[in-house]
Image (cartoon, helix red, strand yellow):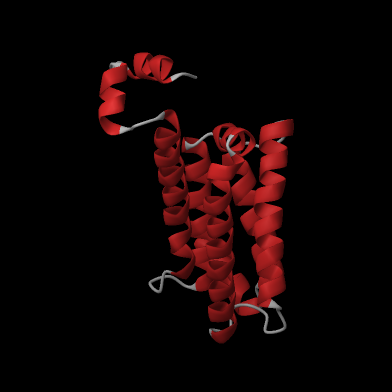
Length: 177
């Protein structure tokens, strides 16, 4: 879409856009920065010290569900396809941050005795990030198999049950009441 078309759809003039952005690429970079900043915000709850690790994981998945409901995964997929050089750094950075937050959540869950103590947190964090986003993008964007709301709730339940021990199961049951 041209800047002229974009301005028209926004109900502003092209000149107004150019008052804030020097080019379409600069506008796209601002959009990409904003989209990934909001995604990062959705992940912060993984390490909320006011919640137990199980609730943190559930709450984060709910946040991701809201994020992907509000931000079409098709838009994000299009950005990755059409502007890979612009998205690559943000994507790589976000992937790394999410992995680190999952590792921290798992370590805390083990320390607090709610996750199994035989978990390889590095391997599991890689698995979670790949399976969560890879499967989501494939299923929602390409197959339309799942809605974002159903997907994130289902995947959170599935993965948490693999991580938790009996004490963690009690927390999971309480959080669903």
